[in-house]
Image 1 (cartoon, rainbow, N blue to C red):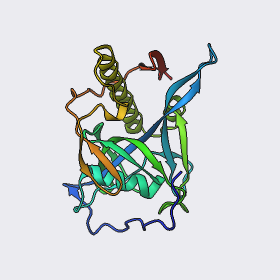
Image 2 (image 1 turned 45 degrees about the vertical axis):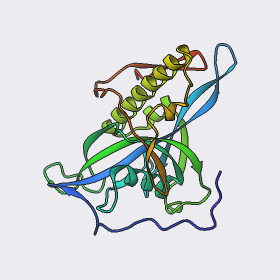
Image 3 (image 1 turned 90 degrees about the horizontal axis):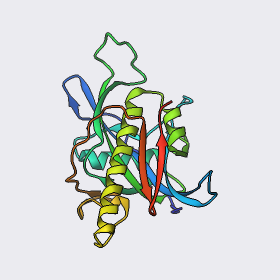
Image 4 (image 1 turned 90 degrees about the vertical axis):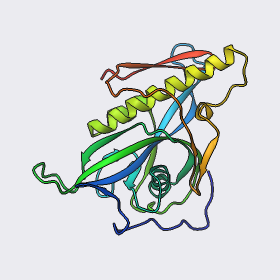
Length: 237
């Protein structure tokens, strides 16, 4: 883990907050890392994906880092900033969003009121730095989770849909990587299948994507091949 003398303070207030009509614009990410898992059948270590979730202040549920998109930053920069402020992680973000979702702020639950409506953009963030201290550490805990456990803990439907799309993108990236290996071209890590870095901020690297747009239909399983092995992640629960 990276060590910090002191964390930069989190942004507060909504003076620079972006809005679109009655919606507050929000940006966030699904931080992830590739870790070694033991195959329950063979007992051998295989590569698997873990995602990072954070606790909500004064609540028991876990969420993905997200927050208001402000008028002096891009969506990608906002997502990276929120990842550091809420979870203390930095990394490489995929420029193409996983999608956009409309949901209500947890503090405004009156479905008949336009107040509290949010439009959120979510990205995939490959974690390269995990800091020991971060701006919202006193109010938020962080937890690395296996994919199946993360699905179980997603309280809201939009979070499950974002996680489904994240897995779809990861599977597509892995297919590209395997095709490159078969063609004897230089292979790249999953996070670097995109084009070279175009935008650099203090929190992240942004990689451009030219991949095909994926739909948001629910899917029951994902096949991720790592180290020439296929891993099936079942989400039919």
